[in-house]
Length: 145
Image (cartoon, rainbow, N blue to C red; front, top):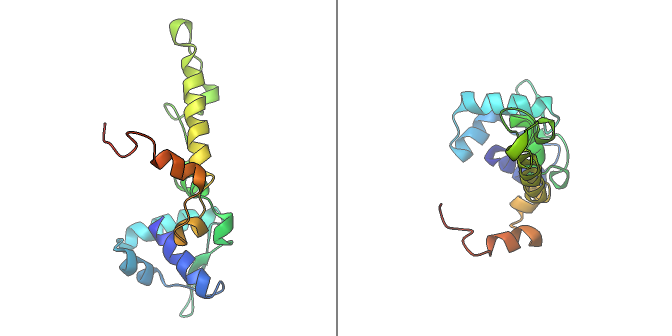
């Protein structure tokens, strides 16, 4: 996410500009080898574009308003909510556990509600959607458990 926010900042200045990987790594204190792996995955999903050569680098593959946090997580980690590596609706429980599937599907819905509503543009402009803000103000939201 931090690397993408650097690319978002660059996009705001010039959407067609290429940003060098080492500049991203330095700005966000991310080890270069680790960053390269992440950028490779993001490129494969179309979130990031890359260009080789002296004038090359990385840039967003589409507008920051069109990239949600959920898009990024899916590109890097797969489904938002998995249970034992499976999608919640694909799991079968029997007997006293059969209603547990409903909980896992609801958890996925809650995650989607937050992660699909926040874009890179929102984060870069300090704009947290109202629905997400309301969750931040719930009692206990900031408490560790």
